[in-house]
Image (cartoon, rainbow, N blue to C red; front, top):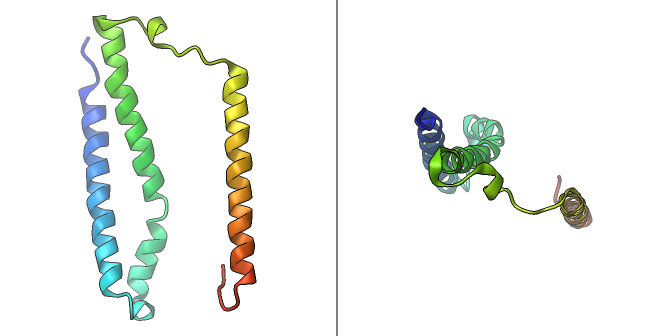
Length: 121
């Protein structure tokens, strides 16, 4: 049985397409920077594009995992040899630390914007 080639191929190509989409959106926004209120279609497109960076990150994860796992399974090394020796408590501690740090950061940024006159969230 061969590795699932299409999954890696499709995820990589979708990521590349999203990079070009982001570049085009950025250039369009830069060109319209002084008259964005006159472009409601562009603003809607930007709004609907919010989930796309998250999708690109997930596609990168899929590409890394699908690209790595077949090499482990198909004869180079066993999956049990590739598992990192990280305990559950370490994973939980890291997860909680990320939540606390990013939660504090979001709170600080929100308060900074609320204290700035004329800036709306």
